[in-house]
Length: 454
Image (cartoon, rainbow, N blue to C red; front, side, top):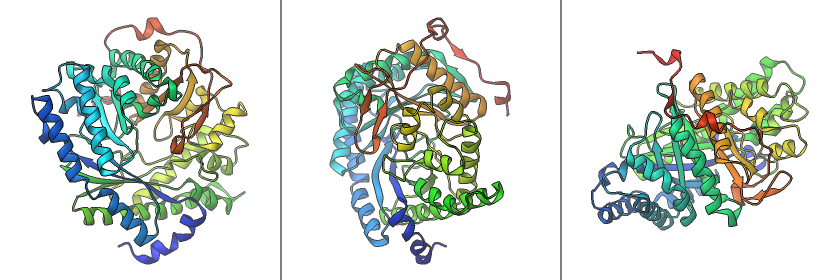
């Protein structure tokens, strides 16, 4: 059982080491809203979200006040809209109307993001999937709180290269559609392989079709807590280092478990999972890069970086699963460039490159995350980068994702400003040799041989 002593034990972490619950995410199924009439569909969606999430923000604020645990964000994830809108939507404009309804509902209940403007196309695309994907640039340009994702590959099905090529074009179009804000729309668009159904973190959150009508998923984060703990074992062996990470991850996860259970009981909604992801922010001392440097790297990107990250990720998961029976989502270490001051510093010092970040994604929780690249980068090059990252996820049976931001009008040496939790990012160079002939081949890359486990 979780008790007040455990909460008191973490007070120091909260006050001095940037421990927080990053998000309470309420998953809401929209399957019962499906209707062939678009106007009726939008009405049902708005009413379902505003009634189900009516007390989400106030409940989160009450828990914050009562336990003294900062809860940074209250969010909503919904059933992938490509499924929900299939019967009613006859084109991209119809899907954009649903995006506007979601945005309106999110504003009404007071959440900062709503995820699930999504399509699952790891094997092939329906017409509805294609309409939704093609609507993404307009939808993200015309809304404030919508987050979008597309799952284009899995270990079981392979990589849908038609969808990868299309997503390369969509990322570029989204960048153009939001170029007045340093192409901010791309920060709310994630391309996945092996996307989890229960991820509470944005921008990739959606509610899987196997989930309940409503569910509470909590994402907890504490890079600063881990960094502070590791300062006490400088020069020690790997065994003591790993034990320290595990014990710290255990304590952090217990905080998330407490908040998740409280929110579940107060809202009358089932508890789903705790996602223990070391998710950094631009705040000083809240950096995954600084953890890796505390482990012994001069700078992130130096030789040994991938090994250090692999160890960190594994120990975080081991500590987390001992603290909660329902650890899910992504759970590990995020390496978003724009949201981590240590990563930004490493890029500026030329210690960290796009290629090294790709190598690091082989062993961490997500993928190429919040990386700003030159606005002139072609859609085929973006598709090639997406394909590389999807291959890592497919072959290694893990979730990988791409959140690239080709900042229109900016080049290497410039900086993109996103604001808030999204931070800022130096524009990183991209290999300029082309791959258009490769990504233009039609069909899909087959699943790896080890996927055949029935």
